[in-house]
Figure (cartoon, rainbow over the protein chains, first blue to last red):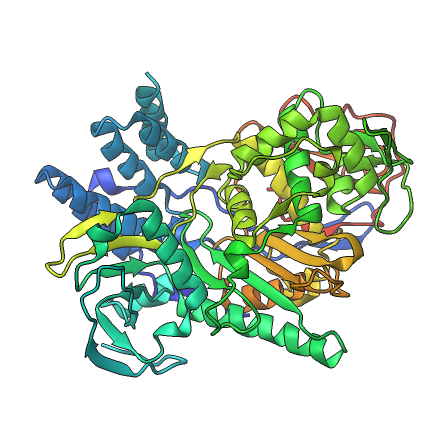
Length: 144
Length: 460
């Protein structure tokens, strides 16, 4: 099994820009390998925790692309912003924030159906905290 | 910039002639991206430019899709200019795995006196709909009949998730623990024939849990359930999953008496892989002119067509296929790597199918013969093996399951579907919409036989 340990290549983003801080969504089971049941003195071997979904953490590449997208938007270059976000999605397809940001652009363009769908997609990928609240707001706005 | 690759395409410096008709040449080159990104993305874009190379015919099936999608979306005149670059989602490493895995199976079957086996493979990325590899036949270099896109074959049990999804969405009426009868079933059809479907093992299994009817691919209980749900509702689900063809409302639809191409099946399973979001399959990411102006891009467009809870429950059963059901060979073919999927086998073993997904790949494999004679292979013994090879070689992320807020996991008795407890014998956890878990019935014998390890991974 060609399991590349991508975690060893990731540098945890140290960007302290408050707008960029994204809390980690809940991870898959990370409990102990086994549990001894007191009743029966039988060891129940738990399933190994699956490879942690590295795409949900903020890799520097993705963070940079999201920052670039914001800069492009400020400069009014929407198509470049969209390209940057789509590239971020291609690189980290389970990183929820990329979808949310794309949804905000679609909303600004008046494309409510895509805005709503992309907000929903961010939720389905496990958006929590700030990102979840923003996505829900986007869905709400785009549903009006 | 070029790194090591399996192949070493010879660059041909000839310029393409100007023609009225669309001319597509391939230049495969490394993207100009950082090493780190290359490792993470595991993707090298196939770029069609105006430089031709001697092995431009190397990927005819994939190019075929590119051409069709361009022709669908543009006039020939728009694209006839020289020097257009067409950026695609092609992944040569995945393509090679898909080709070699299929070839391995075909060769094996030849040795076992089953010549002329054909096949097709489609591989996509679950969340974006990017098509990354297509194999159109056992001879991948042959630019002829593209079975991946054009072979219309009966899908058999691959349709069953659509039946069960229809039921599961009606969460007040059905859940994974609902009992369905697998006893002898026959349906009177207008023309005077009775329809009397049989299970693959020719047995009847009494009352079975909805979960088991899907996981073990029982025909009888599925047919009965389908009749209860009504063909209209099932057809609507199939359309929502992304199938556009007209579908005849025949009872045998519930057992897959419907023809689809592997590409169509891929669109259907893509929606399941993408958590219920319809995600159109795309080969092209952008078309760029020689001045590097983007003529058009194919933007990511998704649409939530099913609620996340229903999809979560269905996917749980599709994981069950790979543990307790017809796909359990995956436990030793791809050990310790969670995936989900469905086997499909048609009458007389004419078609062998497997459709499934991990966290970063969705793939459909079909095996069959062009003359529609028997392959001697079930979905399990045939297509599943090819699928497993591809996933094992190229997938890096097991299936990711985020439990929706309105879903709870409850223990049920494996035989009766009644509420149970973790410490009981013969019990298993299943997901339910909050408030629909079966009531916990009488006390049970405690014990830890029949422990089903894989479920415990889903409990936090």
